[in-house]
Image (cartoon, rainbow, N blue to C red; front, top):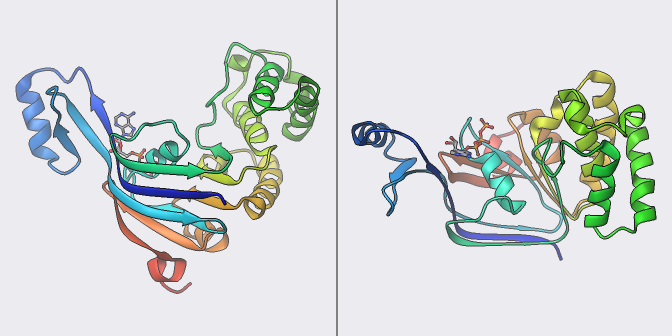
Length: 243
Ligand SMILES: Nc1ncnc2c1ncn2[C@@H]1O[C@H](COP(=O)(O)OP(=O)(O)OP(=O)(O)O)[C@@H](O)[C@H]1O
C-alpha cells in the first residue's frame, strides 16, 4: 500500500557568497531559529526541522503555514528533489508531482519530444508515448505548438504543458503546490475537472495551499508548518476549527 513515513526529517540549504564575517554574524544574530553555522563555517537555512509524520493510503493532507514555513520544501523532499540532511523518509507508491511548472522539461526540446521522453521514462512504449503527445496536445490546446521548442512558450503555455503532462498518468501519491491555480479561466475550468478526478483516484494527496476553502473541499487532514516545524497535525476541524 502507498505510504509516507518521515521521522526526524531535516532539510537545510547552505547560503553562499554572503561576504564578510561580520555580516554573517549579524545575519545569525537576527535569525537564531532558522539559520545556523555548519561545520564548514557556512550559514545554512534550516528549512525543515525534526518532522515526524505518517501518511497512509486514503489520506488527503493539506500543508498550510505562512510564507517560508516550509511547505514547498516538504513537497519537493517528498518528490525526491532534496536529500534530507538528517532523519529518515520513506515514500512508497508511484509519485505524481505538480510542484514546479517547468520541472523535468528540457527547454530546448519541443513539446512533443518532452512528452515522449516523459512517457518513456515512465515505462511506456514508443507508440504509447507518441499517442500520449496527441492526447496532451488536445487537452492543453497546444497541438499547434507541439513541434516548437518549449523555451519559446509563454509562461501560461508552459503551465498548460506541464499540467497536462503531469496529470495524464494516474499516480498513487499526488503531490501538489498551488501554482496550478494560476492559469487563464478557460483552461482552469478544464484543469479543475481533471484535478478532481485525479485527486479522487490517488491513494494519497499532499497539497500545499493558502486557500482554506480548497483545504475544506479536498482534504481530510491538515499539517500546519511554522518556521520549518510541525505545530499542528489533525483533522480539518481540529486544526482549522468548524467551517
Ligand atoms: N534553494 C533555497 N536556498 C536557500 N533557502 C531556501 C531555498 N529554498 C527554500 N529556502 C528557504 O527555506 C524556507 C522554506 O521555504 P519554502 O519555499 O518551503 O516555504 P513555503 O512554506 O512554501 O512558502 P510560500 O508560502 O511563500 O510558498 C524559507 O526560509 C526559504 O527562504
